[in-house]
Length: 503
Image (cartoon, rainbow, N blue to C red; front, side, top):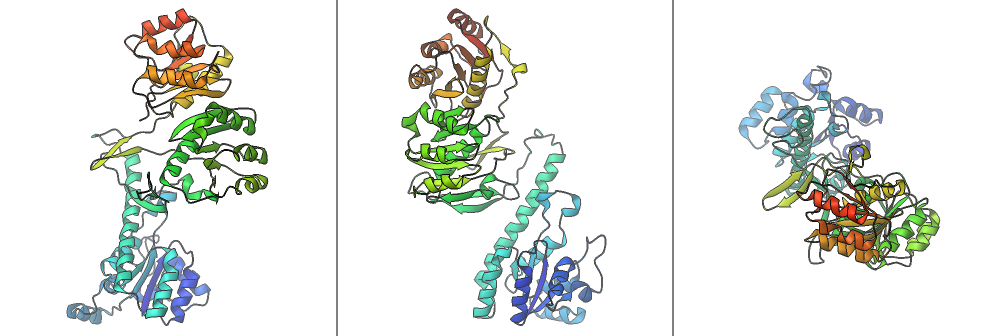
């Protein structure tokens, strides 16, 4: 039995080579792989000794040779193949172990692998006779099967071939994406290429989908970094589909609020509590106070370490997930006592390149909604200008309302969201819902709308709640009527010229 080993990711390759050798396999290898195997006193033949040609063209050509690819692609039961192998001195390979240059880590011409994909695809094509291993995590099960059966079954070789073609497809997709970033496509905007190569890898099977009768899993985009992939679950049950969905919303929102200590409570992907404060414990308490009824069964996100003080405040409230950069040992002792509470330690989220939403037979694709809080580009349209404290509240309200399902209204007072109206079919109802939830706590605060007011009565709820400043995109044909109503009520109002619908 004969194996060809040529890998960039050398995790576990020495132990795997040693086990193959002990099973009586002959090993052939190239470059750095051959060197590391030989350095560990494992017999190995260098590819150059078979081909008679060393690595050339700056290592661009190493394994591209008939004695290598003939050995991978040969059908030993085919008489014509047998004749060619005898004439040209080609020996077959029974196993190929290969993985590719890490193109996504540092894209460049020299990290476009040629020999690697050629070997992988050749072995996968000839899976009737050859096993192809592209994932180091497979080494253990390969050795186990070889020990128990003496060879890999056809079923195993088919699974390995499928994994191999998936491996090369994902690799090629990364390269295409890199070229997309460099080439202006005249048929579409540079941000929305004519074609998108999307390769997904299942990372986590979830407890269930959106409802218990549905199956769910979390996938990652091949070659893309995600905070989910490095997150550590420190306690609690397995995550469900909605746990992941809502935690994503919470983690994105809490990191959009600036550098102050901030806390967010999310329910059904919408915030029901948001606050910033001088310290994180105060931020959490104030976020919870926004809507404690809705906070039941919610997701909590904090942008700093969870301390014992914060944990003691969280513990009495039924919560599905707490996500934070870190947890003190004292906090973990308190929170892990709640066996069903999921605790996630996570890094800052990464912004996605594009936003995708499934429709029948395809996807809607758009660029991400980036929320600007540049006061210099905004316009105060009323007779009264916001005070410094009003500016602070309207900036926070604007950041929050952009993450609330439309139609959306958010009331903020002294760094605390006190009323959130979301997902309404008309803006008036969203405003009255926010005012009702504020219950008198919004006096002198900010009133944010994710889109313009089509009529002056959109300000009724702001007046009802006692807000003193309004922030909205503007752009209605009745803006002058809305401005006049704001002046009459003594409100300050700011136009941002940017809508933030979220459906």
